[in-house]
Amino acid sequence: MFLKIENLHKTFSNGLECLTSISLELHNNDFLSIVGPSGCGKSTLLKTISNLESISEGKITFSKDNPNISFVFQEPSLLPWANVFDNVMLPLRLKYNILNREKVDFFLNLVGLYEFSKSYPRELSGGMKMRVSIARALVTEPELILFDEPFSALDEFTREQLNYEILALKNETNYNCIFVTHNIREAVFLSNRILLFSKRPGTIIKELDISFPYPRNEILKTEEEYNHICRDISSSLKEIKVN
Ligand SMILES: Nc1ncnc2c1ncn2[C@@H]1O[C@H](COP(=O)(O)OP(=O)(O)O)[C@@H](O)[C@H]1O
Ligand SMILES: [Mg+2]
Image 1 (tube, rainbow, N blue to C red):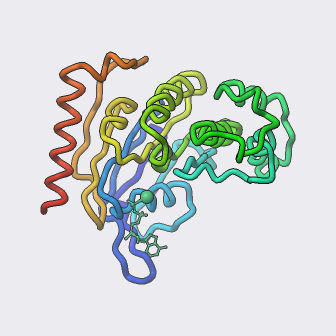
Image 2 (image 1 turned 60 degrees about the horizontal axis):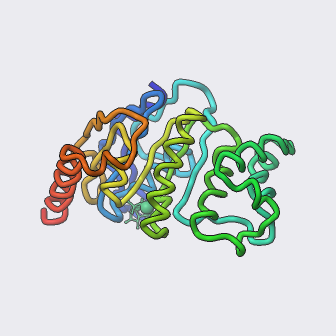
């Protein structure tokens, strides 16, 4: 067990009830995805886990003190005036006040952007910017990465490519992760567990174990069981919207 959330409730100061009765465990090495309707509190949940947002009730416990947590957002949010190398170096400077060039090179190499170290964000494609953002998340060697719909703004081909890449990166660097996505097929392809959320106030209405072995490849997407799980989640989500 890496993270345990017990009976979490979140109501904002304006009275808006955002999350209710959330209990979940993140096990070591989980790829846990969260799928749910827009506005149900998914981003807020990630913020409470990383302590960017307070909780109203309940408990969040980690198996170790001060875990190192990184965030990857839908927007790569790179510094436009800094080159790729400096963008990836940034968290090391901010967090530890160190300049570890070898580490930055290592992670740039891992995401396939070593040759673009000196390029500026404006010179990169959307997929490349997202790779920089992922390298920046990895560079502090986090125990947990929170992905908040990271690939939503990318074209389908780039999204698929990055899906393979984050699985390979997870295999190499062993981070735990919580991955929020609107894309059901992406969630099933990547995850070993998926939580479906109700509409706001968000709560977990279904938990699925996705037991396909890793490493996963595109053949999985043609398998009947994969497609069956995707259809099942899709119809569960349609019910939420009707109710
Ligand atoms: N700081 C805040 N104050 C008040 N309401 C907020 C705040 N942040 C988010 N909300 C509201 O909480 C709800 C859930 O937001 P969010 O967590 O972003 O949903 P999701 O990521 O699932 O789309 C939305 O109705 C949003 O408007
Ligand atoms: Mg969100």
